[in-house]
Length: 438
Image (cartoon, rainbow, N blue to C red):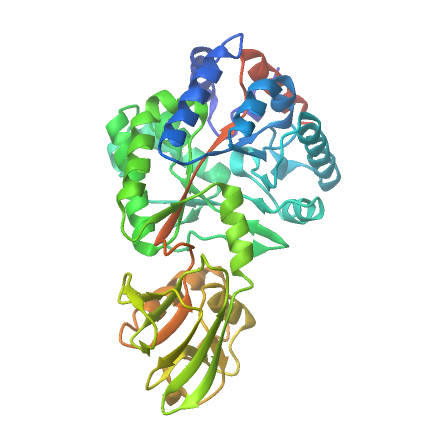
């Protein structure tokens, strides 16, 4: 049997090491894996949170009982393909057939689902339209890499192994992109944060619990300061290495003020879909006063900065105040919205609205505290610089919705993939990859 298909993301030496670790972490019966999965669940449950696990359909079909028990306890499960193969290399028709078969298995086992995560975190342009057609709410396969590890201190082999993985899953640079959901092709796309347990433990050989803890806490610090989203990816079979890190992340999440919203992927996707329909109407009353009506749910976070309102407002962060009322009068010398030039890219306007800003096209630039007239061209790489530019107008009046509910500064979701539960599952996975099924 040729092993090249299995070493695509690892190299031959890494593959041999992976086989050794599999023999240590998985048993003939499900008991060894179920013990680790139970520990994982109990850590999150004691903290008052629930994880999201993406499970391959054939694995679910072989081991439905314990998955059903976790589902009854509130754990969310997402589809991780029918078998654990590289769907990026699959023909569209075969891929759709696999996803339909996965749906049949989940339905037959009585496990509800709304989300998808691709094996190896690899998708292509066909994947999203298929998922949308099949009724999925979200997919979580886009990858952002956070530069929080000094790779120069590791061996050449470890650096090469890590780079090999990066070339395989092609993550975006988190210093250049926002770590936020996006709605595309009818789906909510939720980015995964790297380095994950695979990168840290298998590629770089880091097994010290406190070192793993510090890596993930540094990602959390960066994401919280930016008000973005941390999708922590931790496979259940590595929980013994990462228990301290997970406990510390969850402990820290309870201490942060403003709070960190901890939610399942389903809850994040539902929130993002809900938020898209929010709207703020401003009716001029004269003398710099406006009647404001915010059309949104009670859990939405309405923020105002450098303007007066006639209702109670509470200090939040970055000079903003939060407003609980949905109807109020606002007073400001300049319009507390973002003015843009008449030739502004529709993509730029859509992004600004998704960020909760009120956008007005044209008009007199002098009427606005923030006026942007250089957005004729706009793409994903412009989102983060534009967001930073707007927030740098710290003296300008501004009214907006925030990204997260419940006055939360940032958001976190604890997730993991279940590719195998027993040694036989792993053997079947090798056979499935060998056949490719595509």
